[in-house]
Image (cartoon, rainbow, N blue to C red; front, side, top):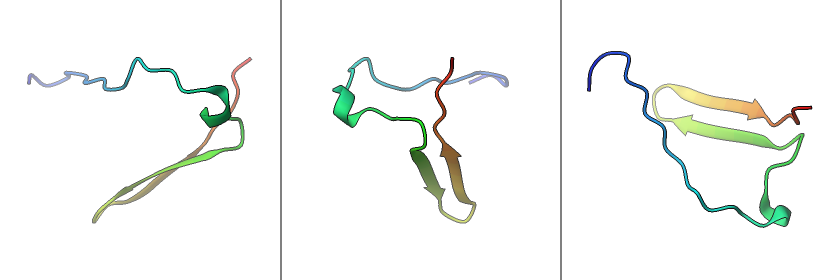
Amino acid sequence: MPAGTVLSTGTGILVPDEHALRAGDVVEIDVERIGTLRNTVERLH
């Protein structure tokens, strides 16, 4: 892939509301030898 290429992954499947992310939820991704990326979900108005 050329430099500057952006890859976007995801799914077109919508989850039921009871399983969806809500404001205040924390999403964490652990990458070995790098660390943890941690973001708190916020509602956009």
